[in-house]
Length: 578
Image 1 (tube, one colour):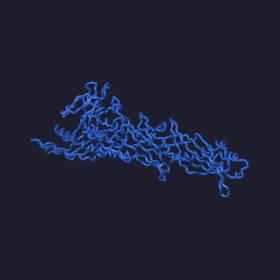
Image 2 (cartoon, rainbow, N blue to C red):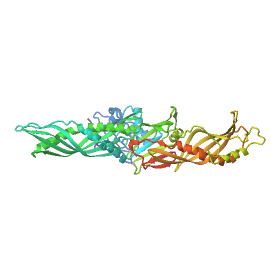
Image 3 (cartoon, rainbow, N blue to C red):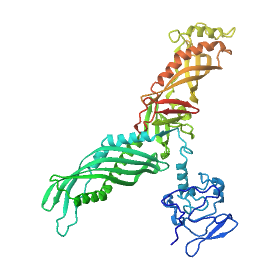
Image 4 (cartoon, rainbow, N blue to C red):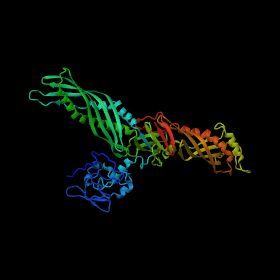
């Protein structure tokens, strides 16, 4: 048995250490003078103080009584002991702030004792990684897109899923209420209430509170009307019981595997409001009222908490299904959105990292780079989604893939055909015997490489390349390639949201032309640029906008509609806010 220290934090209370001396555990460490100390366990269990030349250190296994959270980390609470934490002090400073780069075990101790509290021996690497992940959301998790959901949005989503759909009412109706029986008195018969059942539940309300690094607290208040048969002595009549009940529970993610988050509902408790009891005869004794109230207080939590557990399990499956979905991208492939890590709660939002696997119809995957980035603030919004530049580029590679196509160089095809043909004829080398004189020209357009999306503040640009082949087909079937040109295009992109998809509209910003080859020896092409630019605007861009008409499908995060969403183009990011 050890003597309790009055300075010890009670009930998990965290106390900030004085700034004029190193922060220490108020239970097992102290300063009586300015010299460093070392603990030696005494026979009575109370540490003895001896001045030494090293910093605070306790030998043996002196468990820190304030470290009531030790079991949460999965270690052996009995193995907690004080240790030399000079390195931790250098990393964390005397302010008490500890980062993941310091000794992570310190953060599990509710007393926040930097020099001496250690939560387990040995610390498991898995626990350290998980805990540091909770402390640093979206840092170290590589993904193509991330989102943050406000508490107001979560409350609306859960209220719709639990209350508006009738899910809670359905599960409440399935409760089996036990009979109520009073103790038999010496001169009276027992009071027995049988057939107790729920007549209706009404006026349900729901609220949530985010628990940083843990999950969320769900509070449901509902009015219950119960009825049954009450037998008092030899008289039997209908009894009606009306009460308000508040159910509070914590929803936590317990594990993450293959894109699926497993959640549990724990720390559930119920608070009963005023209980109103009516008998047809109106003869209701105070003892019957107290008996009913006492019975309901004892039994309802065991009935209502499993209801909340079952309801939360169903809603969890429904909501998480919106984060693990395969969506078609036009007719050319699909994108598989999925979680890449467990959700994280801060004081202001629920944050999640997702990725999208972009796959062509044939089965090959278009890769993209992933990197961590900071989410913009939610402010008063419900939801913010950020899509990273590389991920969007991989989607454009699928969306904007156009098969090569050929068309005649004629005024029916595009307005500048005659001018282009005349300009090409003017480039024929002098004395060229193989140059066609009056043969009709044909033009073949082929995309090369993948488009690259560049996001800068308030500006989106796509860079891509096409090959332009101007050729003549002779009567014998042979082909003379007059010009093989590479055109590097820079396209302005106008972005918008429609029908849950990211819509893109392209316009030409800049063209750079390069001569690849010529069968007839043409070497100068600068005079062709205006005519080929008109060709690209009239022929290529309409096709490009046509294949992009369906847009890029976006995940329906928790069913929150993107109608009226605002777009913000940042450096390397596209932010969608609702």
